[in-house]
Amino acid sequence: MTNVITIPAFGDNFIYLHPCGGGRAFAVDPGDAPLVLHELQRHNLSLAAVLATHDHWDHVGGAADLQSKTGCQVIGVGRRLIPASDRTVTDDEVLTVGEAQVHVIATPGHTRTSVCYHIVPPDGSEPGVVYTGDTLFVVGCGRLLECDAATMWRSLQKLAVLPAETLVYCGHDYALENCEFALTICPDDRRLRDRLAEVQKAVEYGQLTVPSTIAQERATNILLRADDPQVKAAVGMADAQPEEVFAELRHRKDLFG
Ligand SMILES: [Zn+2]
Image: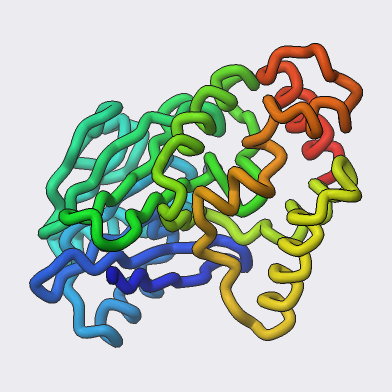
């Protein structure tokens, strides 16, 4: 079982270190270089690479510093978009980072060039891991900054079809407010109420709200369920297309906060 190291940063960001064999790890979305260097040292790991899900400063701000201090490769989309980037990825590409096989999934929506990274276990004996950046959150999704709702909806559906047991590590800790918002739409949803209780407990005890799983998100994330008759009815759009329902949900979330 891969022991992903979660590094909280900037109040609500998550940076991750993913051990990839031979005493190495890759960092996902390292907005803060000193935090990453500290955790590498604490766990006696060297840095194999930086993987960026998108080019916002709170996800890539530490990349150039980590590259100059460790000589690691920086991997992302758009050489000009990501400081110090030296490896541009494309949709459906499989990268080898250390001993890890990393499947790139293009997920435009939050930004035009957002990607997610799906780490597939070699023998299928343990769950895979997906780093979803600001595309899929625990019981939510990222804001539509550069694309329309239909584009984000299609991207989220690419994540929804990953194996159910896949562990989801997202870019921000918005789990509590996302559950509270979802319950304004579906107040009687039993699974959602249970999820809120779990998240409240984690927050109360100072525990992390990641990882989630694809199965949990399919069950409780209303932004993945815009094709679900219960969710459609809840927003008074029983006959609408899923992308229209998704657009309405995303709009209501923007107003909610
Ligand atoms: Zn972002």
